[in-house]
Image (tube, rainbow, N blue to C red; front, side, top):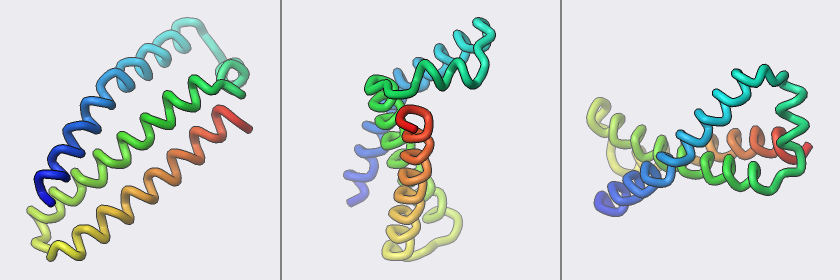
Length: 109
């Protein structure tokens, strides 16, 4: 199981690299362009591209963060594997749900 978690975290990191740079580029463009929140929202509403871009970002971050939290908690709290897995899944699912709501609000509502 540990090798699968290790590989999943590394794969999620590889996926996040271009997404982080893309997100930073968009933020810099928006700030330098002086775009307001309503202008940004008007550009993202109904966009399948932004939905997929940030949806993939949310999934990668949720997986990466949940596995990282599991590793940190195993080192500091010495919990058994069942408790660590429950915390990891709970954190990952909550993160994914909250991120999906944010992506939905920015791209579809």
